[in-house]
Amino acid sequence: MRGDLHIYLESESLFERLREYFNDRFDLNGQLNSLHVERMTFHHALKGGWRPQERSDHKVAIFMDDAYEPLPEKRGQFDYVLWLNETDSLAPAEMPVHDLDISGCEKLTNLASMVSRPSVDQCLNWWEEWSMPENVQRHVTRVAEAAYKLAVWMRHAGMAIDPILTHRAALVHDLDKIQTLQQSGQHGQVSAEFLSQRGYPELAEIVRNHLLGIFLTQDLSAFSWEMKLVNFCDKLVEGDRVVTLPERFSALKQRYPHSKVLLDSTEPYLWQLNDEICTILALEGHVALISELNA
Image (cartoon, rainbow, N blue to C red; front, side, top):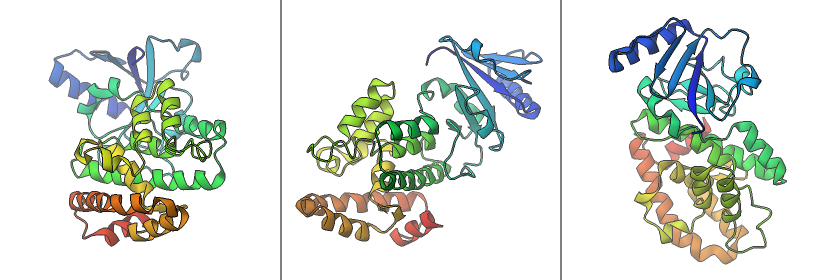
């Protein structure tokens, strides 16, 4: 976190809810237009919008609303836009453009650890910087959509997971795909180093571990759900289509015949992950999961 969090709201009802919530818990005296909680200050009723010259290393400006509709137009005016998504709804857009997504007021005290998520625009700029081909862009977009859906559904089912971190990691998981085609063992490593150097260590770790080989070297239970969902959804998307695991693995074996042994040895781990996800979401099985993702 660069500095104190300044959270701006245009919704009077939301500001009153927050003032009541925090006063009840911290015995604070909320003022008319601002409320200070630990390192967070809530401001209501913006006048004149955000003035860029006020940005500094000591102030992180966040726009917050409990409705999604006001968020897209705030992109670029603030460091982050935050959705108080209490119903764990999916963003009504092809890509969720908000930067932070919390399911309740109590999560606000964890914001300081969550403000290391790149925006959608930043991810798209990296695509251009790394000369990502259109077919790879379509693939990662579909993987990100599937992973984001699962993350939101699983959080609603009670799992601790960050849908936006999951989505952004999926958007950049193949950032170095073309550059590392002739560099054995480097796919994922190069872009992970790139992301780490730019201040996104969580993102880097997910990208580093999106390949099948990690199932043979690490304990699946030690992975974060964000990491597991990006890896899993990458194995469900053939091109830009969500398909069944058998269809995806069949295509991978034809495309990479030299990797057949690896594919055969790791496929059971994907089925194990599939079963765990289906149990959490109360789905009858793999076909039902694929159907939901394609709905």
